[in-house]
Length: 374
Image (cartoon, rainbow, N blue to C red):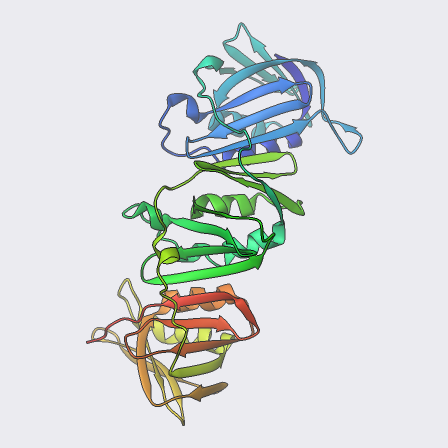
């Protein structure tokens, strides 16, 4: 295996595939990139067994030669070491050669590195075949589905199913749902009415996919029984699925009838919550919302630090007096995810889950469970 390659394009491919390299590898070969030089160009694969990313550095790009002096072959090299070595080169072109199937020699005319290789046969087989029905989605739609829900997924492995975003297609809607059991976020977009599936995709992987979409307009998505594939540009991302029935999908937990409504400017609410929560040093910063006909106040108190209160001015409240306490971070993240100038908060009662929406967009709903303060 031998080739000369544009350094920036080589590094770009390594960085993309590097999103799949984890800190703990279940297989010693998975700390490596698999490099395959084929007639199409240099194929780079990275995986941690849950996610796999395949990306292609093409022979040419926009009529500019990227790879030349090529002799096909494959190699397995430590992902972190290779990426950092390529990053450090000052030259614009690198020559790469595998010697005796054991050493990779990389040279830019000034610096030379010789990196040990592993046997290619030790790299596990990765299923990148499309199975089932695939469909295309605008990248902007996928970004919205993920950015408006992923923050609500559980960030610990105590309940693996809750670390996922459930993607469900039925009745012409593709719905993303995330919950950590104390809150829920749901976003829907329109899709082909014939499309039907339900899969649980790790939220972290979906976030990585969205971060890799830059420069692409469309993404092809292929869900199946045990994996989901995302294909865009010259990159393919494979994610394993988290088995089990997603709890928020099967239960009708979002209220449909409410007794109290608060319409408020999003920035004013965020700023008020941020200011009063400074006094709360507990892990879950509890903030209280007190609402009545004549005023709405956001407050917090702590035996150690004192208390704070701020009155909201740009509001419209409907209902009898209501006091409700909540996790400040949960409400702040939900309001920011909506991305709207104003938000509507709808309540059933003091200890019933409440809903936050963009009054001009019913495709997103944020559900939050109140907290007890006594």
